[in-house]
Length: 151
Ligand code: DQA
Image (cartoon, helix red, strand yellow):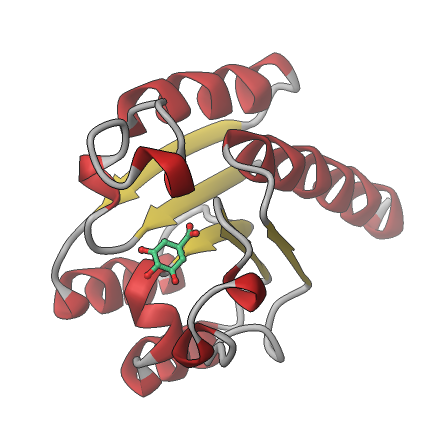
């Protein structure tokens, strides 16, 4: 069982970037915590970040040929702009959970629309690093339920 966690632009600056909104934890710390959570449940995890739309699309497309069973995606600013990444997740048909550190609905109006939410299994937003950890827990449950259904 394998989970791919995808992080969009500027998330590499977590811990330095707008800490009152995004918190003090770095992306490396989030990587450590999410990997620990999934690996404790016996699930392989790959953690990916890119500032480039095409690299995110390429990584999503490559799930066609790899073991990824669930994706956890924080598309960051691409949440509100990228039809191209939306089309990539729709194309590969790998179930995914959308996560955000902040709650975009309490922020500027342009953050209220997501190109991903209607395709996602679920959306978790506003809980900082806990959003990622809740998404990991839900991904674990989803994979275990799938395993039972396929037995
Ligand atoms: C974000 C919210 C987005 O609106 C923003 O552009 C980000 C981060 C979040 O995790 O809260 O870069 O996805």
